[in-house]
Length: 111
Image 1 (cartoon, rainbow, N blue to C red):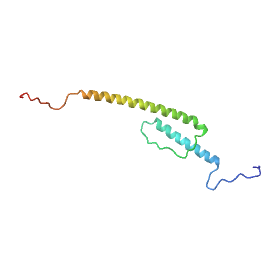
Image 2: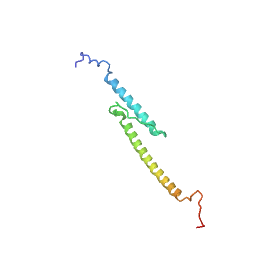
Image 3: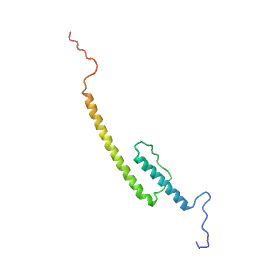
Image 4: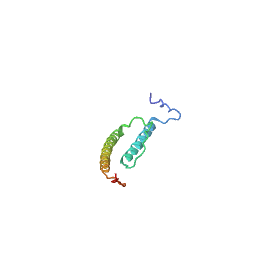
């Protein structure tokens, strides 16, 4: 393309490439922000897989990798807590099984 040749016009209804890249970048930032908030929250949230994000922008790869590592650490912590809770429940059930009956007990001594 020579300097005198104008750049091709974008297709009707489509944004120029740099605007699309900026929008994709912003979508990734928003998604990562939400995932980081969910990771730090104690409340259970329902996650829905985002669609149409495309590949992670190069400048966000490090942040996404750190978030993934933090999610894996959190999952491991939750699994440890789940196992500990099951052990505690098992111990409580074993203790409850040794309790004497609470209802009345009658013995027929006349027989």
